[in-house]
Amino acid sequence: MAGSAQAQTITQTFGSGANQFQIEFVTIGNPGNAADTTGWPNPAGSVNYTYHIAKYEIHLDIINKYNNQRGSSPAISTYNLSSFGGNGLLRPATGITWYEAATFVNWLNTNTGNQAAYKFSGSTFQLWTSADAGYQASNPYRNSLAKFWLPSMDEWYKAAYGSPSGLWFNYSNGSNAAPTAVANGTAANTAVFGRSVSSGPADITNAGGLSAYETMGQGGNVTEWVETAGDRINDTASENRALRGGAWVALASNLDAASTSSGSPTAQSQDLKFEFSHLD
Image 1 (spheres, rainbow, N blue to C red):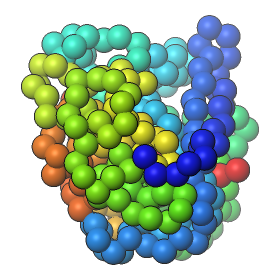
Image 2: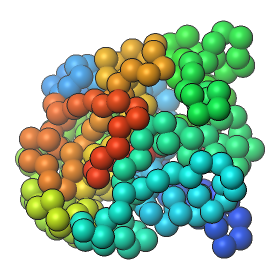
Image 3: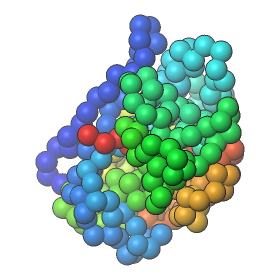
Image 4: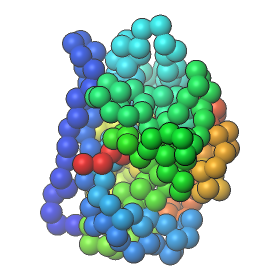
């Protein structure tokens, strides 16, 4: 694994009482880094500020506690993994649409006294406009005043394939060589992929070796939503959103920095999960 210093982490608490939960974030520094020109999209991964990304995938217990605090508001529905290794509370929350991920992130903001990241009219997602405080012409999906948001393609890419030293790697295990396929574990240069459908994903804290920035599971285990549209231009509310990382059934090539796909923001699948970022 690249990088000799242990990554800085920040733990944030959300909710209250029996439904309180915590999320651990890893700091992604080296602001203003040069982009990678060997993967896809090309170029990718240049971010001009320090940010944080969830170290682990969001697990079922977090979504359960979130749903318990939402009252009459629509709950996030996750897939039943009983036929895919079980519904343990540390299994990744799968089957979440992009819109559901956005409403979850909005709640993280409002629960901590911050501006919502994404604009909804009822259940309908909308673009922010110049009449809204926090509007960004370069990205009308995201309100600039929010503290938590879904990671952009560049933010996700940098955390997965970049390093504190500025080097780029083909895989999210801090290496240009494909990781070893495993069912679970935390050994360096491993990832959860190449598995049978019925085996299911690993627990979020047991989902392979770490990236150079010390995130887990960005390669393999379950595929991840990013904020960015499939065409990289966030200008239409209903357009496809990008997906990254591959799942437990993926081939090694699906984990490579050159591999990406996209899907409808209403799409559900057994191998969808999400990460999110926040500023200092």
